[in-house]
Amino acid sequence: MEEKLIHMGCMIYNRFPDYEISAKAVLGAIGIKAKDMHNFACCSSTIVPSFSDEWIYLASYNLALAEKEGLNIVTLCGTCTATFKRANYELVRDEALLKKVNSRLEEVGLSYSGKTEVKHILEVLVEKLDELKAVIKNRLDLRIALQHPCNVFRPDYIAEFDNPLEPEAMRKILRLTGVEIIDYPEEYQCCGSTITMVNESLGARAGAEKLISANKAGAEFICVACGNCAFLFDKKLDEIKKFEPEVNIKTIFITQILALALGIKNKAALDIRGVEVE
Image (cartoon, rainbow, N blue to C red; front, side, top):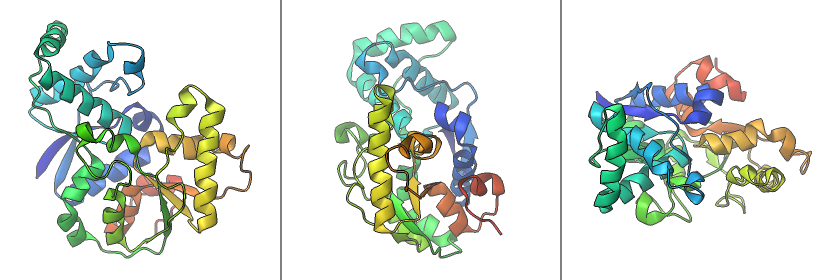
């Protein structure tokens, strides 16, 4: 069985165990063992580089841990994915920066040479579509709107995955499950989660516009593949309802839909979002 280190990110560790459990189960079903790396730290977030150069050290620390282990990283969070890929991009192109980073990493017994490959779980699943198709057991009667994790695809010269403006990864994966994918006008807009870091009201309004649009289009679930998107739509729903009191749509992770289609019956992975497991 292929082995990868899984980096959940702070949000998923602390708030969304259902995403973690369902992701590990789905990866296992297609022959990938997701190994925990308990020394992993916060990625340092895509927002930190806007006010500090120190972000590169924390990102590099995680990459160096994986390199020492001899394994590549699969991520569940869009922000972590973008941060690690950006760090790799800069380190392999800037010898002076790599030397500077390694001088800091030496203090904790690590070094980095740029060998760690980072992929979001969507990228891994798209690469394994044939394997995934082979283990699908159930066709699902669900109406799903998509929330694409924008940081997974942008900027395209770093992400090197899918169309950065109109990504197809989630559609390709979910078509295997039989769900009805509902188009809605705001599909490719940001969820609003990152905006809440500087303006909570504006971020909530952006989320409200997406949810009410998906609701009106006929979706019963909004499907996410990032803890930040889920945090806004799920944990900040009361804030969103200040703008749209009538919004009535549930948040579900793409790995939960896949777990249902694979016949995985794990309540810890599924029923937190209101999905019934027989």
